[in-house]
Image 1: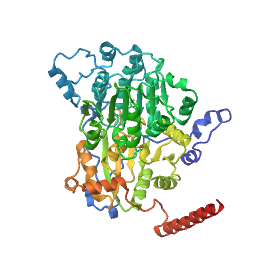
Image 2: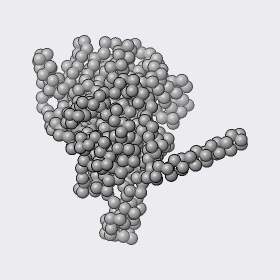
Image 3: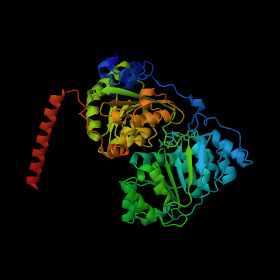
Image 4: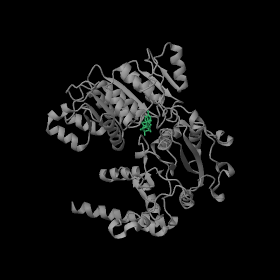
Length: 540
Ligand SMILES: Nc1ncnc2c1ncn2[C@@H]1O[C@H](COP(=O)(O)OP(=O)(O)OP(=O)(O)O)[C@@H](O)[C@H]1O
């Protein structure tokens, strides 16, 4: 019957014809009961580091003792009393592991009700917060919101899944409470379309029932605004990716001269090569002298902070927990797989033993994502693959399916590493070793969100071993127990780290086909593609 259910996955059975029997034909659901831990599974022959790499699940700090996570803020407090002195403020910040630096720092808020009582937020904000289950601010929200209310530039660094989105959205709502029709007054820039869409949905929930008008800049919405300039006046808040906005600015489809609040989400990536020029152009278009800039990310390298400070006025800097650390809610494991083939072996073993979906599988390139998908599609698990070469419609559909639980395993590239908030992801597997510490922190941060525990497994081969220490450092920082021998590993040199960040390691193709045959196949494919290209050229 199980086999039948697997084969029938996705098929629709007519209720009229099958009556009560319909339950028998329900597609195979994820089995969350029969699950096994995936640690301690390196085949002996692949155990390069001996028993050391057969790591046991690490003992963790109990979630109840953590701050920066949702575990402690989901319980609402009745303490609305204003702070009486600086000692009280300092004790409050210490309790929530909030470090804040800068001049003249506004006091944190203790509860969301304080937004209305002390900061003149409209009641609809509180109603919507309640409606969507936000009872108590998280540490980053406690401090970042008052900083923005006081119109101060802000650099905010808080763990993945700790509520940074709500922190900047509530900050923006304070700026746009009046009903002027002057066009965009706040802009949120995020690196991917998926993340921009998620932020936009969050914003729509927060403003539901009110006349705050939000726009997600897409090809269509930009075109509509180009054809009808009056439409531009309609919107208050813009959510966008950098390139889309730059196009709109260049084509005179977007006017940012009234923007008072500019938020860069995942700011460190936006301030890297590739995005930096676009961000510069966006900033140049925000001509208001009252512009307030906020940068948010779970990772904020000091080089980025230095650069940011050159464009900010007297910024306040907030760090929740340990700077640039992974969330403490994730049980992190490193698994040695020997050679490239060891990964597929390890993964298949895990699938056959049983695992707890939903699971995200990260690889380093689009080709590898495709290859891995072709290997897993016959494993009887509901698996899909997402990367930037899939169409927008496909990407939207896959994200939706993963959100609803229809998909158990999602193979992805770095596209999904940042910001995406899939509720209840149980497992993240770094099939390919991440190219930087930041990438590792963001990837594993797709689980262990909003106070829920999660698990992350990182496969490493002999070739990855020189970079192992970078991940070991993160594990130790976030409270994981790491064996002594790992702590004694050498840190890779700065030069090596830079090189890896720029170019991923070359890896053997993901394939069950023996290496010799795979090479032959690849060669054949190359010849076919070359002759196709030649034919096309001769036809032009
Ligand atoms: N005050 C709150 N109470 C309860 N849940 C919250 C609160 N604020 C945010 N959340 C929830 O926590 C989850 C993570 O929030 P969010 O996506 O903003 O994290 P983040 O800090 O931006 O993470 P990342 O660095 O990965 O982008 C979301 O599901 C969000 O709805």
